[in-house]
Image (cartoon, rainbow, N blue to C red; front, side, top):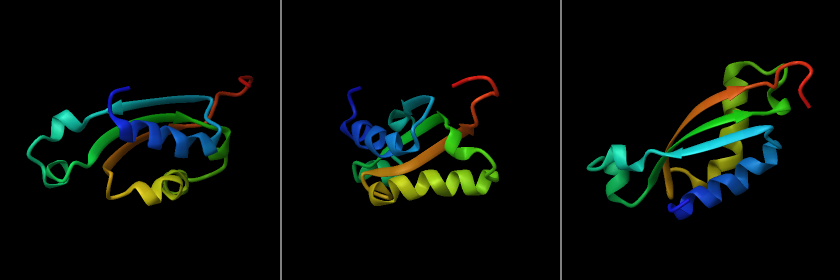
Length: 91
């Protein structure tokens, strides 16, 4: 983890009690982009959490964005999400 904003993101997403969490720094893909010029980071996150159970995709995304609202749009400019609920039988 070389991007200090990743640690902030992990800290906020821990509140979701994820069974699986992967964060990918995509900032280098956005060089020259307006958000990148100000030093903001771009990330993609894969999250599997029981907290998503019974929620629509939109509500799942809102739940995540509520956890990171203080980080956006700076120091995190963009966050791409891939969310899922743990498969039955997994704890």
